[in-house]
View 1 (tube, rainbow, N blue to C red):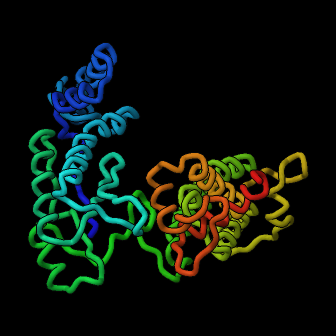
View 2 (view 1 turned 180 degrees about the horizontal axis):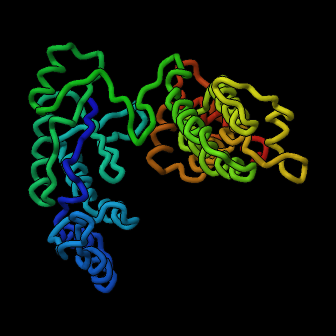
View 3 (view 1 turned 30 degrees about the horizontal axis):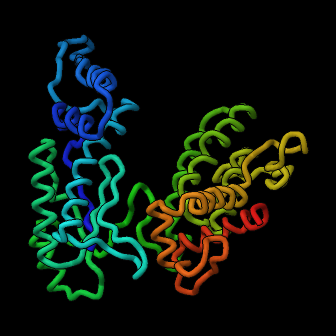
Length: 353
């Protein structure tokens, strides 16, 4: 089963003493710790009341929202929960989830305050996880929002068993978690529907800009810096459908040539030509399909160079346990992520061998 935790006001509730203790435990030098804690405890807050600045409040806990240092400091705190889970796994108190017989047992995935826990679906593991969360909450002063947290259980378990486990955990039961870190957790056959939100986000941006008077240079900057960056995160993990890429490039072309919902203007040059470099007569716009493959090739290179990483171990156990990564082949029941990596690996095959 998979449990997605929601921390109530995660950054605001962190105890400074707990943060300092975790940094000490991780072995950082005293001088560095002192500098970090000065950054944390020197903050003050003021408020605007009727347009006037009031108060000079000094907090006693919490990390500043929006501070680029805060997510990294929060990772020190979640390291405490990670260690608790690892110790419980070594004692045999909880059992991690294996994607394959030869793969590693995965118990948790943490990124800042986005937390996923994996364990065997039984009451013993549920009680153990509940106790671990209580220990962590007491030490760090974090509060687990069980009303917003959710869990899903393998379809091989009956509905009555799943409901019983959800009752023990005190967490609502869902069929599947939709997203984690902004990307879909589960993929189906309809890939176009899976990534439809990317098209919606691009269209929302373009529709808002359509009401403004923009120069050619302004449109170029917006397309390169904003629109073509929207799908980058998804393209680094998944191979986007060709139809979706065509739709995105069609929206970019319509915006570039000034077309609106009610009025279509002539496209004096193909989008493929505009994607060429300026030395070749284009404008240097990004070809999304080429970028998609390049980003996936970069991920494939990471797997090749870091086989001991968690992703490398999981993928090896599932898809190429009897050979090396460069000799791995496509399988009929493979996931979208693996098929996407193999597509990107095709670029490595050309340059590495």
